[in-house]
Image 1 (cartoon, rainbow, N blue to C red):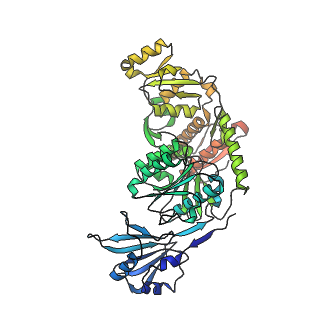
Image 2 (cartoon, helix red, strand yellow):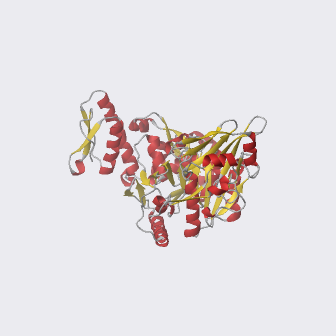
Image 3 (spheres, one colour):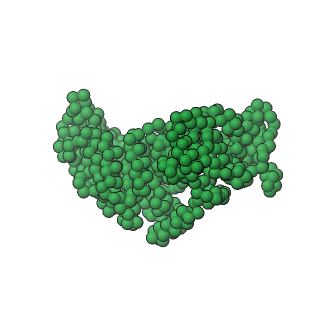
Amino acid sequence: MDKIQFHNDLRRLIEILPPKIVEELKPYNLDDAIELVLDLGRVGEVRYSGGKTVYLGECYVEDADIEYITSKIQPFTNDNRSGIPGTLHRISAIRNRQGKVVGLTCRIGRVVTGTIACIKDIVLQNKSILFLGRPGVGKTTKLREISRLVADELGKRVVVVDTSNEIAGDGDTPHPAIGRARRMQVMQPIYQKDVMIEAVENHTPEVIVVDEIGTEEEAQAARTIAERGVMLIATAHGNSLDNLIKNPALSDLVGGVSSVTLGDDEAKRRGSQKTVLEREKQPTFDIVIEIIDRNTLAVYKNTAEAVDYILRGWPIRPEIRKVDETYSKDTNIEKAVEEEKQKEEEDLASQKLKFSFSRQEYVKQVKDFKKIYIYAVSRTVLDKVLERLNLQAEITRNIEEADIVIVHKAFAKGGTKILSVANDYKLPIYYVRSNSMSQVQKVVKEALHIPDSETLQGYYDDAERALDEAKAAVQKILEGADNVELHPQNQQIRKLQHELVEQHNLSSESVGEGAERRLRIVGGRDFKSAG
């Protein structure tokens, strides 16, 4: 396990401070300090991690003090930030309405090593990772260390898109903390999206590191990068995955959210309204990590699965990891990378036959690979159906390549030419009545000649149906029923049902044996949930 170490250069920061401020700082230990705040007409403040603040006696800040500091640093950029070349210290300005600097925040930059030891095995998977967390919990610190790890120890081509020189420090030479990673500076935050794309187009990176994706344009740039096969390591505005899903500008990072209208039968089966929210596409980032505090991380190893759970109101528990613990038995990086590469090759070979969901695998097979041409049918919905059923099919833009044509019935008159071409090629034509998930799924099964008995519906549908049954049972208990028994389910699905029941402050127990094992829900808290 890596030992956590701190490296800072406080001397370089103290050198730019007025003598009277330096004198006031002498009694205090700055090893755990986060920033020094100097506002005109007020006493100076030293802020520490954990919320502690120390006030510097009667040392009131004057114009001369602010001028002393600004004369020793480089001019502020348009985002009112400057720094000390060769360090990670950052100085930010507050101005009055005339543009005069009336306050300074001197952020103490540190190289902190060992903070990613607990997620090193995840970083080695070559998957895109998004970090979330409130300001000051160490998101940028982790990006810095990951940049060094991937560039130096894994030998990958890493480009750091460094807005305001947050990651690699001020000056033209990047700080040694990012190792052999290259750094592209961003003149102004509004240009971050452009530099992200420029990095891919001009410098052939294998990995791009970005701090604070905060706009819809930057989210789109991130998707463009991911679609080109480049690994992304980034942070985003937002404290949690749930918050990010609700952010219309950034939700695309985790697949986006769209409103889908269900058919009457599907809405009734789910026990929901006809209009529901569903994930729109594959997430840009494969893994999401919430930084709860400096020592605790919550890891969602499958972003798509996590988003689907949250949108349906299902209980989900991320894997909690501690900075001071190790989660990889193998410390030989080369061996770990080789094993991961071999695993990826095995997964690629079997992914057309296997459907993995929540650690349960259900195997299903389609005899022939098909290409589908669509007219007025939602590509987003069809993509989700193909993904959901794990069908060996893809959507083509050329009707000449198609094996099947699916047309929205309401728009069929406008597609006369398409239908004529389809008939010329003797292609089977299928019609959907609406772009609802249930309708498109029904027609796709018909088009590919897949009876329900062969598709097995998958764990996804089984879990959804089981949780809908549990919700209905909970409602009966709340309306006065003493207890309700559910249909038999496997252990994994029963666990989801237990967690759903707990969320309603009710109790449940598993009864029956073997294939008849099922949940019984009772009022009150008389039973402790068990598997």
